[in-house]
Image 1 (cartoon, rainbow, N blue to C red):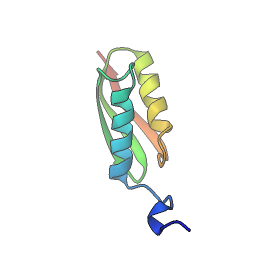
Image 2 (cartoon, rainbow, N blue to C red):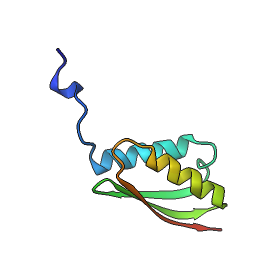
Image 3 (cartoon, rainbow, N blue to C red):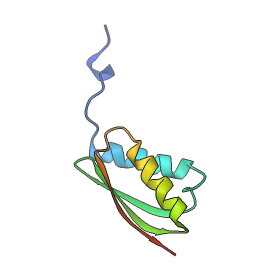
Length: 79
């Protein structure tokens, strides 16, 4: 039997934000963009200026694909 710490539980907003940022920084399309992340009750808000609409789509997809994310608010603007 595993320990209680092995069981997946709800992720904190802080954990979700860290994971989304890590995914954004690791992706070639979003790594060099200035994208900020805030999380409230599992809803991710993306802020900042991006180079083009393709970056917006990729950032939203990466955030949505992160465990624990309930929704994504897009506050990204194009340069």
